[in-house]
Image (cartoon, rainbow, N blue to C red; front, side, top):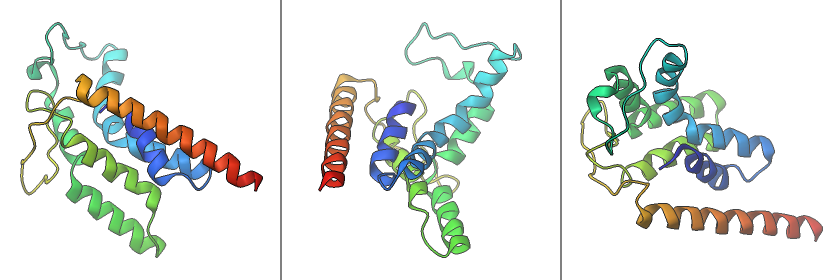
Length: 166
């Protein structure tokens, strides 16, 4: 799934309390991809690395540095997410629900990534198991994703506005 959709899903699922809650959930929703890919894009921007050729779809895996795959495995693991979620729960003495947007990001990626490009290693570091899913850019995933997000956000803003009037 694209990074913006991840943020929007996180926001609508866990950030409906207020603006701060929304933006915190949005950030947690994009964080797994941001942390995995931002260092590489920063190195390309700074001229320290070459941008991979995207003439084929998906890009050739060799064109993407190994450290990105390592970070991706870390940030896309339900095991790692659960450890951090529990640590924050213990520290705060209550769940940090906005952080659950990270978990929903992983759950959405499991069926929407194929073997050919960044399959989601959701049980890492214990297993490299993954699902050969349908890529998120495929129309059968992309359009329902956009339609559902529009419906949920229209409902959320309409319901919130209406309930604040009453």
